[in-house]
Length: 358
Image 1 (cartoon, helix red, strand yellow):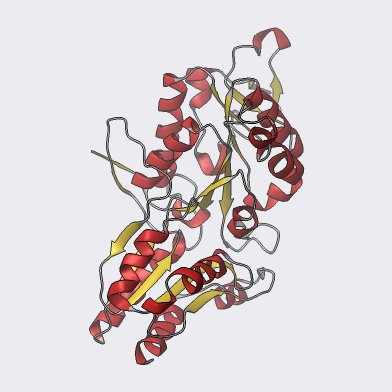
Image 2 (image 1 turned 180 degrees about the horizontal axis):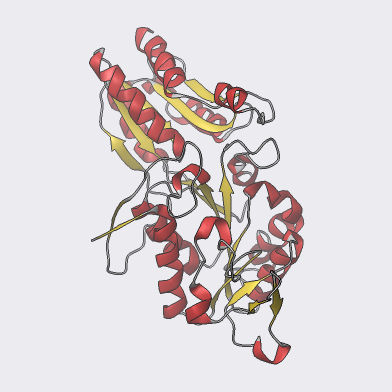
């Protein structure tokens, strides 16, 4: 076992898959530029040393320049202009032609700039071709509020669980990050990977980030999609929370345990496909369901889970389902206001106390 941050676990997964399969390549706006940070919060930094990068020449006065076109052909770490529509178009086209692109955005908020390619092309090509054409691409999307304002702080997972043909995953531990990323790269379908910015660890420091380092196997492994993880066992309330929110739910559960309230915490890990079976088994014990996510209240993925439980497992409930989510408002830039709207350990604990009394 090796101890890794989530950022290092992603890097390890991508590097190993690039070594294993020559059709895998990385593409993004700062993949491995001299003096740069590395794509999606340092993850791709240094990959160009092994696999070749199209931007490797630093200028004396600062900045960088492209290699000559004759040198680019074999590079598998591709730095692009700031153009999300370009990145997504290259990914869809090359994936249809047999490559396996792993793209990243500086911020997941910019997924809106590539909606046509993702929703109308990548997601539908296999269906429209009667299974003859696949689009095996991975789109990494950093998400979550980190004092960057309304356009750089959103949690957008629920926009994409609505699109048939896309798979949506949300790793939240180093073990999950590596195993799920490797599974995503090997998948024959487009996969969106939502990565919370406060969980990366690594060299890029974020205000309020958690230390999410953990053990990661050194041997090859993958994690199948659609398998939730039970982070804490309990008997009174089932809490379903993903990414940063299950860490906060764990802290709330520790306080609640002192009050005699036992919480079982489930991290779905993947939203499409979703592991409803694990939630159902937990509800058979607890009879009460609390859902926590950083996405907005209206239309968040928790609403889909509530709907499914109402249709398939309502007889297991002893009380109404409760949700703790971000209010239906843009994320404020002011740190104090941001902290107010994002679900906190205190809000989770208070919701659980009220639910326990029902």
